[in-house]
Image (cartoon, rainbow, N blue to C red; front, top):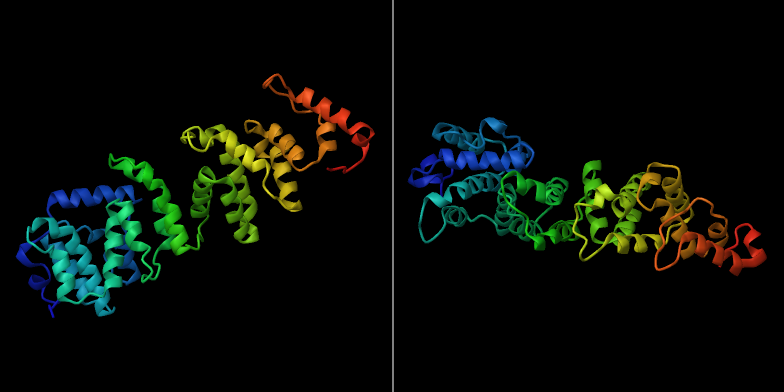
Length: 336
């Protein structure tokens, strides 16, 4: 087996980090918020150095990083993984039948699950999201950095834009694919919020049931986000609505099976809270009352006004409800 403590054996052919490679990695590093997943891995394995050693600015720094890895108090396969990652960076310099990193992995008999995991992290660090998800959702892999990974996937469009690239429309499914396979805990609020926004733009009903699955203390803040990304103009104006329009989302929202506590919270949020300023907030409350059969609430509404639609206004509709209810309109809590 290859002796990884021998620098020349681990990094053959004099391969090293050129200024071009360093610059490119730094661009990805910046797009990822200042830290690559390789650096996270170094921290996890308690290998010191961080930004000072990756990407290696010159050959001496690469040798120093190699020494830090081989002398670390961690398992041999972890050391193999780290060197394999570095060789992924350097492989394009050597044009042989077998990629340099692949040859190394075979020489040290790197277990397939570790190989797959590093391939995924390397792809993620290079903003190759589809390849990353294909590898990081493999069933043999124990999820590592799951919250951090899904957050990068959710912010993918912005990350790519930072390096002058565009996200392919078909890659919009990747955060959901990763979530369904890995079930990240989403312990950080920013991760939960980002996923809630993403899910609501795709499917309001799925978003609602996902919120229901979260701990109780998280649910109301997430409901607010779901409502915002259903109704608020500033939240949805930049999102393509060709397939799933705002109107469709709003109609789906008014039919959700809220329990009594959720119902009270949502109505108060849309009539007294921040949501009262959202486009169509009062309309939504009234539509919700109609959908739930609370016709006396509709008959007694004195707030909602609106444009005429197909010859019908809210006033016309409410008058019709009053006439239909007759004396029952004064029965408190009457529903149909």
